[in-house]
Figure 1 (cartoon, rainbow, N blue to C red):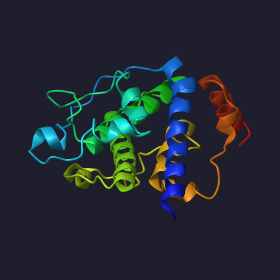
Figure 2: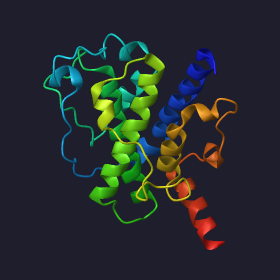
Figure 3: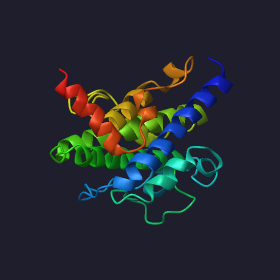
Figure 4: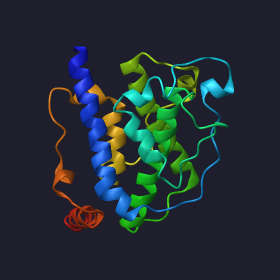
Amino acid sequence: MNAALADVTLHQLLGRIVYFHTIFIVPGCQEEPVLAPAEACCNHRADIRQRTAYGLLATTAWNALDEIATTLPGHHNPCPDRDGSCCATCRVATAGAAITDAWLVTEHHAYHRPRPDTATRVVCRTAGAARLAHAFATQHASACPALASLNGAGSPLLPTPDELPLTGELLTLWQDPLSTASRPVVSWLNHCTALDDIHRVLETRRNNR
C-alpha cells in the first residue's frame, strides 16, 4: 500500500472518532473515578529525547485526539509539565486511553447496562491506547519504548460492536486500521444522531432474537 493511501485511510478513521465523539459522547458523557495514573511519558521519565508533541503531534491530524482527551474527566496527564516537550507517541497513547474509557462508560450508562468494572476499563483503556499509538508510531516512524508495554491484543473483556457499537467499532477498526483502505467505513451508526437512536436499534435487535 502506498503512503498516500495509508495517510488518507488513517485520517478518515480519525475523523470518524472526532465526529462520533462530538455527536454521541459529548452530550451524554459520564464521569467515573479516575483509574490509577500512568507513568510519565518517555521524555519526562528518562532523557530519551523522543519526537515531541510540539514538534510532531501538533502538526498532524492526530492532534485532534489530544484536544478531545483534555476535555474528558477520565483524562490523566502523568507528566510534571504538560507541554510541547512530551513524547508525541506517549501523548497519543494517553489520549487513546481516555477516549476509549469515556466511550465505554458513556455507552454503558446510555444503554442502561451495569457500570463497567475496573478490570474491563483497564483492558479497554490499554487496548485503545495501544492500537492508536501503534498506528501513529507506524505512520510517523516515531516508535518509543513505552509502546512495548502496551498490549493491544484481543481479550474477552473487550466489547464487540454488537454489544457497544461505538466503543466496539473503535477498537475493531484500529486493530488493523489499514484493512479499510479499499472501502469507506459505513455502518448503521452513520444513520444515528444520538445515543438514544443507537439504544433503540440495540433493543430492537435484542427483542427480535
